[in-house]
Image (cartoon, rainbow, N blue to C red; front, top):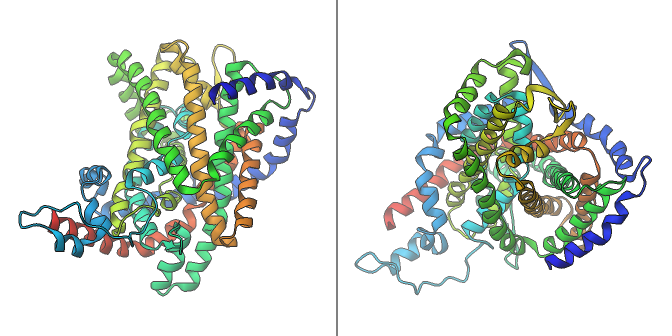
Amino acid sequence: MKYRLLTLLTLLIPFFSIAQEKGLDEKVNDAFMPFATWWEATVLTSVPIAGYNIPIVLILLIAGATFFTIYFKFPGITKFPLAINVVRGKYEEIEKYGLEKVQQHMTEDGDIPDTIRDESEEGEVSHFQALATAVSGTVGLGNIAGVAVAIALGGPGATFWMIACGLIGMSTKFVECTLGVKYRDVGPDGTVYGGPMYYLSRGLSESNFKILGKILAGIFAVLCVGASFGGGNAFQSNQAAVQLTSMLNLEGGATGVIIGVILAVLVGIVIIGGIKKIASVTEKIVPFMAGIYVLASLVIIFANIKYIGDAFGMIFAGAFSPDAAIGGIIGVIIVGFQRAAFSNEAGAGSAAIAHSAVKTRYPASEGIVALLEPFIDTVVICTMTALVIIFFNMDAGAFDYGNGIGSTVMLNDTGAYVGGVDLTSMAYDSVIPGFRYVLTIAIILFAFSTMISWSYYGLQSWKYLFGRGKTADIVYKVLFLMFVVIGAAATLDAVIKFSDAMILALVFPNMIGLLILFPKVKKSFDRYLTAIRKVY
């Protein structure tokens, strides 16, 4: 298969030289940019606080996450071991069969026999598959390109605020994914339909907010479809196209379109199969691609271990006393939280769609699993990327912090502006020569897995809006694949404006619902902990 793809790419290279004057890529970008700019300005509407214009969506995101962290007593720390055990399957019996049935079959010694069977078990995927699918939707190019942009524009201090966002985001993810399982809908054929659309409509109806619930659910579904086209799709194909173009030295006015068509074909092959097919692919791709990236990051970190103290010193100093040139402390906080929010999506509610398909009778069990996502995504992988970028700039002096335009940063030696993925590639290649080729493969895998996961998120929202018929599914999938091509053809600036705003917009309806429904999460959580204590 891989040889056929290489052959196809080789055959298409001659066509990359077409349409030099006002090429097809540029025409696509000209049509896309005005809407992207308007949408970003709309979603990031700000209010003046202490002399800074702070986006309302970030205030809501940070306030909600902080509240959940305190209310649930820092679950990202106190329940971290429990989350690991749940993923390992330690409590699988009670999750599959329920406390009452397990107790009926327990031996006098407290052992649970392997003979319990229950054909009414709901759900489609395991805890690990649900986690892998959700992580594949968050661990993507936001960790590579997004972090580089954050460090370049906000300085090393942005790293601190990304980590802070990841830590409190663990609590938000726990709340939304517990609700995702609690209010999911299971079709006659066993297919699961879940996510914020369902817990907003059903949960708020239970809490005597029926009209509000329907309105918020509808708004979320529309925005989630848009987010699947943007952050979950166009941004990913854009950065994959940039990296391929750079590595293969491709030129031509239709380069992005052609790469986008190839990616669209590959994505289309997978998304036809639904969540089970997506989960089976992502559970293999995610550990592999994350392993490559983490290993390379560790090699560079250990190669610069003597500078680790200086790097963290810059991170902490920049977090609380940054240079005015990079926006001051509030400016750095905004950059850090905005990039982290795009990276881990805690508060956006998107991951709850994947987690709702898990096989369990206890909604809180999947909420516990979900809190691992922001830790893996932001606290671990984003921090590693940030350290590599900081080490690179300490050694090479490649760019000045805060010296950028939009989503690009100016290089000191050439004066050229480069995007986040190019900057990350330069940093890794400076220590591991030739790693840009490996990174290109990792980027394509990151992009591919994120796109197929987000196709599922968007499709579930589309079904909520337009029904569960095959025709509706086909229409959505065609539109989704069109945005793969649009993203590959458009510029990074246009794509990131649209993508950032689409994912952040999800916070408005989702967080409002979470702040009303969190007591139901507490009840589900207590029920699950009680069942564990009685059996284990």
